[in-house]
Length: 199
Image 1 (tube, rainbow, N blue to C red):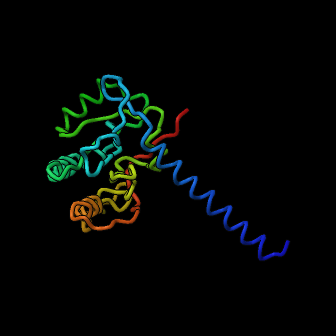
Image 2 (image 1 turned 30 degrees about the horizontal axis):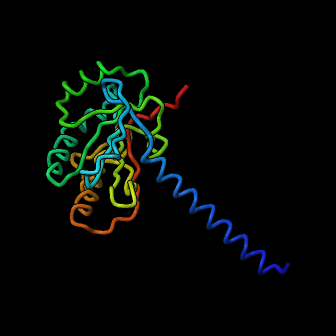
Image 3 (image 1 turned 60 degrees about the vertical axis):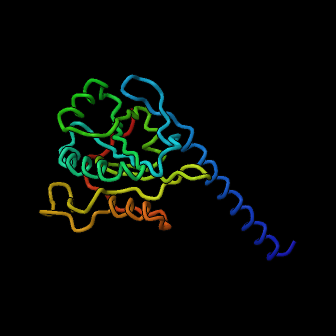
C-alpha cells in the first residue's frame, strides 16, 4: 500500500472520529440534568420556547460575582422579551438550596437558579471561574454553545478593575443572536473565583 493511500485513509479516519466526538458532545449537552432548588432534575436546554439560553456560573461567597448582580439583572430583564432564558448556576456542591434562596433574595436576582453539584454543566461548557457566562442557541439541530467567558471587561485581573466596562461581551453576543446574525463560537477570559474541582 503506497504512502499516499495510507495518508488519505488516516485523514478520513481522523475526520470521522472528530465528527463523532462533536455529535456525541451535542447529544450530551441536551441530555444532562441539573437540580432545581427543590432537588428535582432539570434539563435547561429542553426549553423549546427559548431562542437562547444563558448560564451565569456564580457563587454566593464570590465578591466579583456579587458585584455583577445588577448587570445580570439588567441583561435578564432586557432580553426576556426576545425569548432569552437566563439561569444562575451554582457549581459548589456544598452550597445548599436554602443558602441559594437567601443569595437570590439578598441580591434581588430576577432569574431562576440551578445547582450543578456533579459539575456536569461545568465540564460541558469548560467554565472555570465565577462569574462566567455560557450562551447556547437552540434550533432544529439541538443546542449549540456559541460563547463562553466574561460578562464584560470591567475586571482586568483579580482585584484590578476599570471604573466601567469598555466591552460588553455577553450583551454583544446576545444582540447578534436576536438580530439573526450568524455567530461563531468565541471565548473571552473571565476573571473571578475559581471553580474548585470535585473531591
